[in-house]
Length: 171
Image 1 (spheres, rainbow, N blue to C red):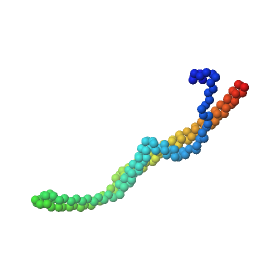
Image 2: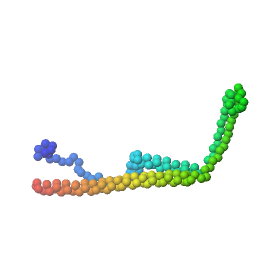
Image 3: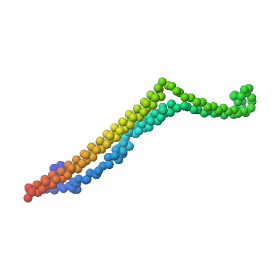
Image 4: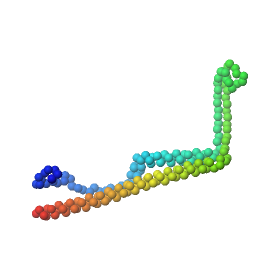
């Protein structure tokens, strides 16, 4: 009353009674997924995992034989492929196939593939750690909400007792 500048005879009552709202059971996994979707560091880790998996596949594929097919067609005046050159429109074509297979590279491909797989696993571990920390934070918040709910119930009981004792003292 003093802070509001009201006389002592004015009675102040709460517009709405304090009521504890029941704490709903939270779906932690759905909240972890929702919280993780908004984190750019988690999205970057997911992209890094995909990239390192693709790199491991490329390194594994480099062990296989490589086959290339080439072809070309030239229609020109003069056609420089035809000897002796003539002042006429002539066409030429060319087709080729090449095969290569690197049998020994000193372990470079195996090391590169192992490095890519290790980077993939490290990124997966970091992703699991982010999800674990989100889950822990949400479980902690859920516990805190339950504690606050219990505290509000306790405070309601205290206010009722104080109100009852005050009424008894005034009568």
